[in-house]
Image (tube, rainbow, N blue to C red; front, side):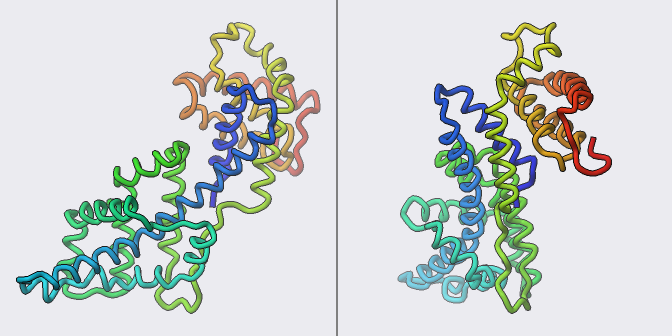
Length: 314
């Protein structure tokens, strides 16, 4: 499930794109924002489906070798550790996963996709991890599971073939990989051999998180001009053209969140946007934003513009 920081980043990206465009219709921007978040789930499902695709490719490869005119003993009696992996079999049996994939029309069908699976398998086949696993005389579910988790961490998640492929499909996915991988590893770890029911596939976010995204985006646009004017007194020693546009947008979001969300502690909002600025603005932005927001929050609090529900939230 997406955490609040990633949702804030998504809103930041959408707001930046909105301010860069000449479109004054925030509805279109909001639609693209929610679409961008939803597409992360596609990435999550596609990566989960990779394991069975790799197993099926390996199985076909074994059958092709058996049909050779002069098969070797290894061709006739192949190592079946991977194609008989119990953990992958458990994933293949997960009806919830395949129902979601079917509803979203996600699969690895097609020549281009199957060529990617082929190249990925060839990469995996050469890895020390794969060789060590295939050298085992016997395995059990836990051994198979640990292998798959390590395979994902070391080979699949780091495959430039897949990363480049997904970035070509959707450029915004380059900011989503780490979080999707975290979701996926949690899902893999949760799968049990003796579970009678399907292991639940993680939700992307709950309804209240979607409400958070929409409200933050809408109110940031509605109050943008007022917030820029308000921030002028804290940035008077800085010429407007020297201020990074991203800094202004980040501070606008921070002020919006402080004023519009009474249950989010002020310190959390401050720290979150300072951390985000380290990755999405200039090298010195976090120090600048910290200084400005610290003073701005103090003044807004005195003026009664910030109202928090509960103790210790200011």
